[in-house]
Amino acid sequence: MPVLVQLFLSFFKVGLFTFGGGYAMIPLIEREIIQARGWLTLEQFIDVIAIAEMTPGPVAVNSATLVGFRTGGFWGSVVATAGVVAPSAIVVTALAAAMRRMKSVPWMDSFFRGVRPAVVSLIAYAGLSVARSAVASPESLAILVITLALLVKCKVHPILLVVLSAIAGALLF
Amino acid sequence: MSYKCSLGRMFGVFFKVGLFTFGGGYAMVPIIRGEMVDRHHWVTDDEFLDALALAQGSPGPVAVNTSILIGHKIAGYAGSAAALAGTVLPSFLVILAIAGVFDKMREARLAEAAFAGVRPAVAALVLGAAWSLGSGCLRTSRNAVVAVSAFAAVAFLKIHPAVVLLLAGLGTAAWEGLSSRRAKRGGS
Image 1: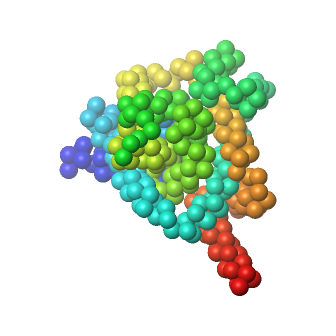
Image 2 (image 1 turned 180 degrees about the vertical axis):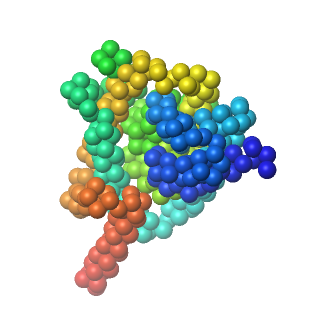
Image 3 (image 1 turned 60 degrees about the vertical axis):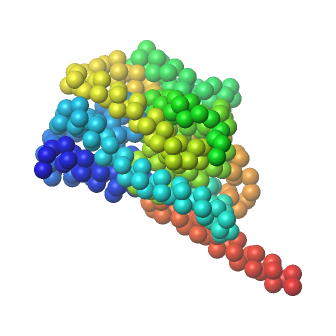
C-alpha cells in the first residue's frame, strides 16, 4: 500500500476511536504510529507531543501534521491531517443534522437541561487539572491569578490574555 | 435559509480560535465562547454547552467537534465545513512552518519560556469560562446538585466524562418525565 494511503488510514483510525480528544489520543497514536508502523521512535514522539503543546491547535491535529510531514513530506502532512479530522467531519456533521430534526422530541430538552450543568463541571475540572500541572512556581501562580482577575473583573479578551501571558513568560522564565 | 453571517467571516473567526488555542480540548472553550457567544452572538450559552456535550460524546478532538457543531448551528453544512477548515488550518500551517526546524525547536529557550507563561493563563481562562457559564447555568438548586455530582464523578470516581454527561442527561429526563406524570395525576 502506498505510504500516503497508509498515513490516511492510520490517522483515520486514531480519529475514529478516540473519544474525548486531547490526551486520550496519545495511547492510540502510540500503538498505530509507533508500534504498528514504526514511523517514529518513542523519543521522537515525546518531542512531537512537546511541540504540539507549544503550538496552537488540538494536540491530535498537530501530531498528525508533524508525523505526516516527517513520513511523507507535504502531501503526507495533508493526508494525515485530513485522516485525523475526517471521522469528526462525517460523524459530527451527521449528528448535528440529526439533532436539528430531533428538536421537537420533548425528552431531548430534558436531557440537555441535565447535561448543561454537568458540562460546566467538566470545564471546571479541566481548568483545575491544567492549573495543577501548570503552576510550578510563585511566578506561574501570579500569572494565573492576574489572568483570572483580568478576565472576570475587567472582561479582557481571552486572545489578548494569551498574548500577554506569553510575553510575561518570556520575560520571567 | 438566511444565515447570521457570511461564510468567509465565519472562517476568519474560527481561524482566530484555532490560532490562539494552545493545548486543544477545553483550552478552546474560553476562546470559542468569547468569540461566538460574547462578541458575535452567533450562539447562546445554552447552545454552546449542548455543542460541548455532543462534542465530548463523539469521536475525534473535542475542539474540532465543537467547531463543527457550532458551524452547523450558524450556517448548516457549509457552516460546518467553514468552521472545520478554520479551526484546523492554523495548527496545520504552523506545524508545517516549523517542521523543517523541528529538531532545533527542542532547544528554543524563548519559545519554552513563553509557553511556560501561557499554560497558567490557559488554566485561568478555562476556570474563568467555567465561572461565567456556571453563574448563568447553576442558579437553580437542581442544576447545582447535578454539577456537584458530575464533578465528583469525574474528579474522584474517575468515570469517563462522556458517561457522566449521559447519566446526567438521562437522569434529568427520567426525573422530569416522572414529575410531570405525577403532576398530571395530581391535577386530574
